[in-house]
Each structure stands twice: as C-alpha cells, then as structure tokens.
Image (cartoon, rainbow, N blue to C red; front, side):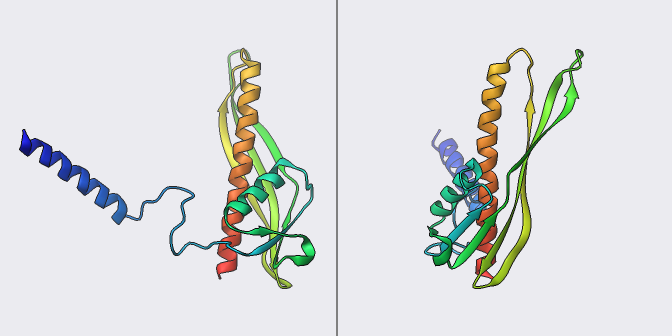
Length: 169
C-alpha cells in the first residue's frame, strides 16, 4: 500500500517536472523575458473612440501596465481602425437554414514611437465557429453577443502583444 502511494507521488512529480521543463505556461501569464508595457505612455487614436473594441483595447493596455494618455503626451501612438465583423454560413440544415456559422472580427492598427513607424497598418483578426439552432433564437443571439465580446478581447490582446514585442526590439 505504501509502495503504491509513493509510486503515484513519483509519477505526479515527474509529470509536473516535465510540464515545467517543456516551457508550459498559462496563456496570458508573463514570464521574466516577455515584453511588457509597464510605464509606457500610450495614446490611442481610434476611428471610433466609443466602440466596444476601443474599450477592450484600453482595458488590455491598462492590464499590461501601460499608462493611457492624450495624443499630445504619448510616447507611443497607437492608431486603431474600424472594427469589421462578418458572418458566413458553413453548413445548412435540411430546411436550408444555417447550422454552423463562422464569425470573423478584424481591424487594422499602426504603432508609432517618436515619429518612427514600428507597425504600419497591420491587421488583427479572430475567427470563431458557432453552431446555429434556428429553434433557439434568443439563446443564439445571447451566445453571439458573448462571442463578439470575447473576440474583441482577443483582438485587443493581439494588438497589445504586438505592441509589447515591437517596443522591445
């Protein structure tokens, strides 16, 4: 009995060691060598300043340690284009209604620092698949609203990671 428990503990220890040795880390967690925006003064100029994507980008920048400032005070100028959302039917039911839908959210952005272009008019996009049930319209509308919010956060995260990488080089 004791031998069996020791063997289980040894297996768990070896699995834990293997996970850390391969470089595994949770998505979004920072490592010591990851590029950070701590203390960087960022000015966001958005095509639509009150859009949900702009709000998500501002939150992501704050979480990464950046200071949001007006355009005249920013060390880094981040220009955000309009959000484009598209929906494409992938599969149809026997009644010719959409059974599976592909949702795509994309935008363009550019990053400048001290009159130097770091990233010029680059795109960021996210694609998700969603099963569509015509008999549950209210539930699917709510699911789509939640998916769009998640997609905005993912696009904002892509932009922040790109900004951190560009400022580090």
